Length: 326
Image 1: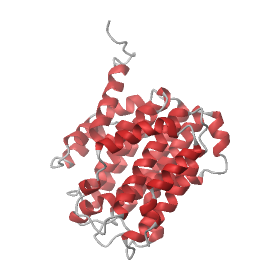
Image 2: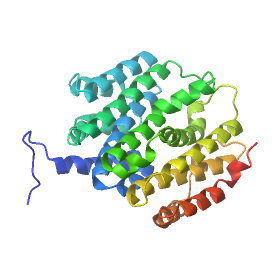
Image 3: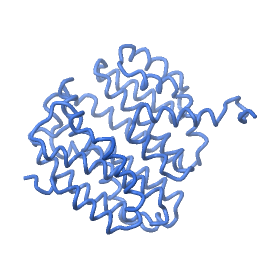
Image 4: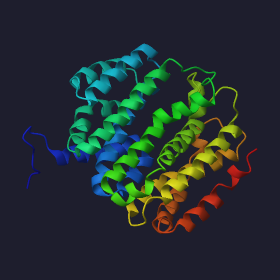
């Protein structure tokens, strides 16, 4: 029996199958965590990740000048907000990235129409949250395109602003989506929304530190100028503490939401702790967690998310190297 098609002739099941498949190609971490979410939330969060990945691909393209990146970011945002056709973004973007080395990310850009079709099957409330997130991220990254240099960002304030526009806003998005689907969570998180930003920023700080050798090789640093690795690890540790407070506010009955957040959190804790134990490293592969470690933690999360105490025990034990940083 063939899958149903909508009145435009598109097959929504085929679109979703593509979304699931490409997630595994562009992010092993999110391919592991996103399926833990309830089905209705999994679709919109997975879709948002792919949209964010497209924005990231433009930023990561070393051969593009800042003006071209800003132009492509604007075309992408206009397509997401339905101010222009999606083809008006895809064609010039693929042309500009003709020398880009990641075929999976180029394929994702070519499938932007598929990703946006999925977005438009989500609820209006979820669509509005995604549009806000992509707007803040796209416009924020455009601001930082001209600030890419080897010396780093101007200061800690600018660093935190960067972490907000690329990840803190995703924490806000998750909070909105979770609240749309869980009145109990909406009640719990009220007046604690700032913790959502810290959750996103903690994950981004992990990526910045982990990817620093690769960034340095292409003449870029997203660290604040004048701050060393240990100072950044101390800031990241405080963000992790707030992140755990955020996860604890998710009602225990929302098992999938809790597990999704705790798995991403735990992988960040273990990665940062690994960084804290090394004076320097030349490749992010040196920090790669062993597959058996990741899978053991994956299983552990099944039990840990049912207990705030167990989550705290994990954090206390796994973050010991971070607490020793001076």
